[in-house]
Image 1 (cartoon, one colour):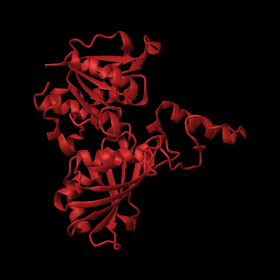
Image 2 (cartoon, one colour; image 1 turned 180 degrees about the horizontal axis):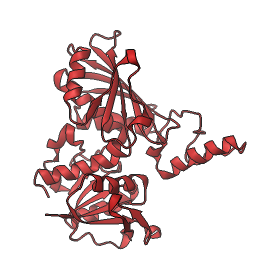
Image 3 (cartoon, rainbow, N blue to C red; image 1 turned 90 degrees about the vertical axis):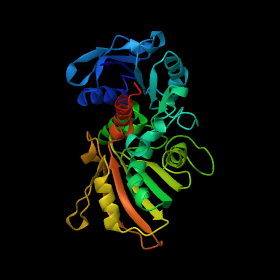
Length: 338
């Protein structure tokens, strides 16, 4: 049996990846529909090796008969249209931040907490976590299973693609302008992004946090364990694709580097590349186009009783967004929810 699948926000960076991954993973779809705003209606978008799709206007679209919709159009658009689609019987998997912290909407990373899908029919909406949260909980889950985590301190090095196509364009155009001796004022970012790092992502919330940092705290607790303390600093770096994280983990009980390495090796979706003597570790440029979350630089933190450090890298447009959404849809199929 094939399904009718809609991709909302099909002209954006994540929407493009959603279409690519649906094709690459041979999702059982009889029909895939590309949706975007009315101004994009009529445009053609690539559907992997299957050719192109003509974009339809979201505002005029009827979701009756659509089995699943993968939303990535921006939070305000999802807030308006996701409930409408869900009310027509379509299962919505939403990649925006709008529904993530609503208690009756599951926040899912399939390898970590697919059990939380139970009851999703109450709203017919499933939330996809923040990109930086996804790769963090992927690395933490197998460790938490063998030694309970007390506290996590994470510093992110997040690529500009997390800010969308316009952010990627700004990095490219403003970098080029520097070489042309043509200084440009930042528009998407609050500080110049070429050859710089910016310790701010999203808007201020409270207690000195920006929203990206707050998301990592509350989403990690919702997905993994509400008792885990999380301290996050989110930084935008001049990289096009691929988020990196320096993660310090404090456990309640002893755990060795080898035990951690073995647990990570065995965990679905994790690839461990870690040989510091031979300079083997993963950088963002090497993770682009990959499905996995990569872990490197595993080592003891001698400053706490039970502490480890690790380096975590992933393609934020794939596992950090589009791939995770498609995996949720695949889980719905395999578990008989669709």
